[in-house]
Image 1 (cartoon, rainbow, N blue to C red):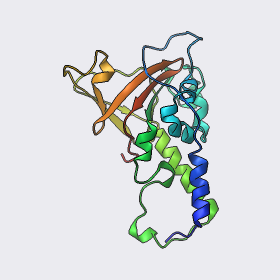
Image 2 (cartoon, one colour):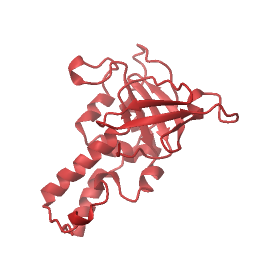
Image 3 (cartoon, helix red, strand yellow):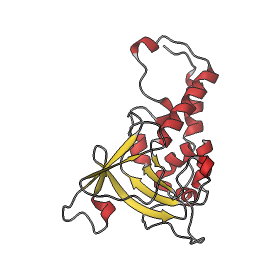
Length: 207
């Protein structure tokens, strides 16, 4: 069994889950309207998704949440902006293992002892993978029926959007879309550098 004091684990978990306040809901193609808030601005005021942002802001990639939609060619980021799939706090708290914990250890890994430094690095790597799985490096998205697949920033991980033509699901296209295994989009908001979707589930880091 990995040996770390309970206080260390609590300290690391607390570090990653230090919540801040954020905001969300809507969408349109990216424009040159400099008065629009950035994705980082929207996250800062969306209190129902503060846990996601508390994880994301620990990473170097968080700088892209504030940058203009036209990223540099060398950055590897889409020039049309980003699409964020942002889980609610409720969705994150419902996870059996939180993002910094990663997947359950395999049976043959349970007896491995790691240092505090190694544990911290592994936790940060887990967070990096989890956040990347919730970012699509293009915006805006389209939803041609019945399904559309988009790659995320996490290498080898894609998400599938399923569009339904059912009545009573709202007038906007995004209101008729589910992600992967039935994750629903609760709201959408356009930013100067992309689109933010608030979702009622979390994206698995598995391919």
